Image (cartoon, rainbow, N blue to C red):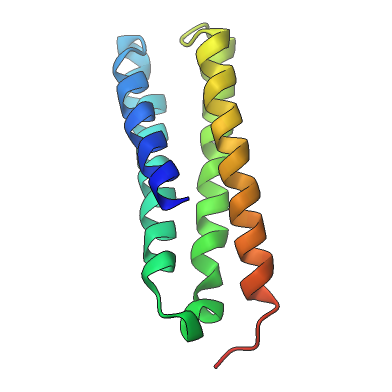
Amino acid sequence: MVSDLRQLTVALFKMSRGLPKHLRPTVAGRIEQHSLDAWLGTRHFALTAGVLKSKHVGLLDQALGSIETISCLLELCLELRAVSAGAYGELIAVLEQIRRQLFALQKKYADAPAP
């Protein structure tokens, strides 16, 4: 999943370069920042020792929040016709897959007893 988020981050950075100039400082910048936050937070969680994972479930919460923000920003880009429907659909499908994986991890470790 961490590699999926890394690949998604790269794809979002490439996509953001193609946004209209007036959207780059605001929308593109936020998409890029939230994709980095989701990737790095999830990576940090993945590198956490197994017994400490339940203490770091908050990283997954933050990653899920970032994924939701990215979804909203991509929806705005679609409405503004800054991205094609096809590109939007592909990105949303990947985001949904990652979201499901994050929810599964969150559930697994939220129910685990803290060390």
